[in-house]
Image 1 (cartoon, rainbow, N blue to C red):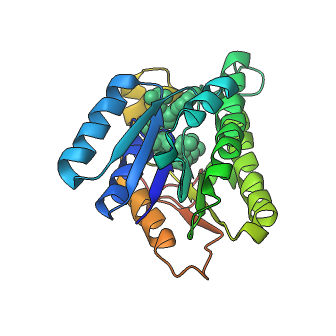
Image 2: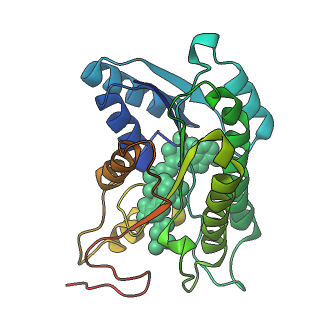
Length: 251
Ligand code: NDP
Ligand code: 8X3
C-alpha cells in the first residue's frame, strides 16, 4: 500500500478520489484552500477507512506556498506513490470580447501553473516509489473548444500537452502518467464558474444524468490497479447523454 497526494480534495472529484485511495488501503495527503473542508474530509476518511490522512492547506497558484507546504512534510510522509493533479476549475463563461482578465489569470495560474508547481515539488518525493503514478485531471474542454469556453479550454489543452510531456520526460523514471478527461459532472464546478449562482449552476445539469465524482474515482482506481507494465495514456469519460461539449440528449 502506498501514499496518494491529491490536490483539490476539499470537494468534488478530489474528495471522491481521496476516499477511493483510502478505501483501497492507501494513506492520503489531501490539499486545498478551505481549511474547514480539509478537516471535515480528513475526519470522514479516518472514521470510515481507519487510514492515515495528512492535510496541507495551500493555494496552488502561489509557488512559495506550494513549495513550503510540501517541504514541511515529515520524512515519514516524504515518500509519495501517486500524485493526482486535480485542483482547478473554470471562472466565468464569456466570449473573448467579454471575458474578465482576472478570470483568465485565475484559470491559467490554477489549472496550468499550479499543476506545474505541485508536480515540480512532489516529483523528488516519488523517487523511492516502486509504483509511481501521476494523474492529471484534464477535461473534454481540453479536447474540443466550445463557445465561451476559450481560456478554460486553453488551460485544459495545456494539461493535455503537459501530460504528454511528462510521459516523455519521465519515461526513464518508470512513472506512469495518465490524463483523465471528464465531460459534464455535477460537483461545485459550475457554482464556481458562475460565481456562486446556484440556480444557474443547477441548470447546466437539467434534463440529463451527469457524471458524479465517484465515476471519476472509479476510472482512477481502474487505471492505477492495472498491472505496472500497463499505462493508460488518457481516458475521456462523458455522461451517456453527452456526445461532445455541444451535443446533449436532454429530456
Ligand atoms: P470542485 O469545484 O468541486 O473542486 C475543485 C477543487 O479544486 C476544490 O477542492 C478546490 O479547493 C480546488 N482548488 C481550486 N482552486 C484552487 C487553488 N487555487 N488552490 C488550491 N486548490 C484549489 O470541481 P471538480 O471536482 O469538478 O473539479 C476538479 C477538477 O476537474 C478541475 O480541474 C476541473 O477543471 C476538472 N473538471 C471538472 C469537470 C466537471 O464538469 N465538474 C469536468 C472536467 C474536468 P479549495 O476551493 O478548497 O481551494
Ligand atoms: C468541465 C466540463 O464541458 O463544462 O471541464 O467544460 S465543461
